[in-house]
Image (cartoon, rainbow, N blue to C red; front, side, top):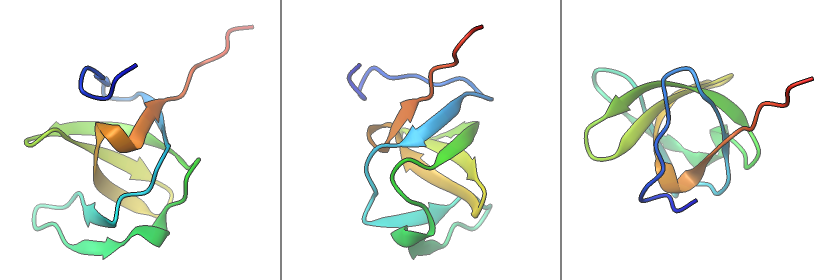
Length: 79
């Protein structure tokens, strides 16, 4: 699926497919952080949609704003 048409829902599990050059924290006053706080393959939860096609994603090491091009939906397996 093309990231331009990708849409997530709040609560979706997403995985990091490529790392951005830096991370922006999902706080009222965002700060730039090094990209090595997360890794390719890390799974996070979608918390919110933000202006500028950014998504607030909660990871174990914090909540960050990421563009859809860095994310992919984790498929849930049903038993």
